[in-house]
Image (cartoon, rainbow, N blue to C red; front, side):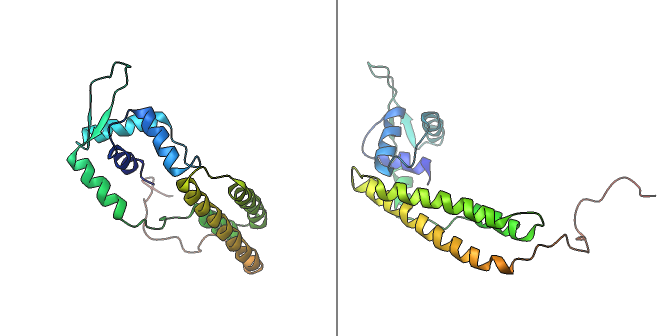
Length: 184
């Protein structure tokens, strides 16, 4: 999720200071998406630099409020209507694919460890009480993702018998950085 656009979208409700934005973000995306307040202020600095927010003078309490600009409003509105593409790379799938092909790796142990983690995650999400609709929405998505991961791990385990580790290609690729040292 884009923190940048999320903060802009929240600022459409009115000016906020950094810690307030952090709390509003977490309230709207559920506590499963913790956000570091330092990241919020660094993002606000970049948004100001890019002309998407303006920084106001400190209030009598010392808080520095940020307000969205017209350009920031356009960015937030466009972002809220764009679909979210699938991740470019799934780290677990890549790690398991490597483990399946490397001698000495233990893909069964990786699957078992991941199954434990996904099962615990699913149980946590199913047991959680939701304070509002936003938390329920995020919690449901996380629970369904954990269920899907468990199903995928079942498939991986079934395919494990077909795994055959292998070494490097016999013929190295022709491209790459040649050595500058003369071979004798």
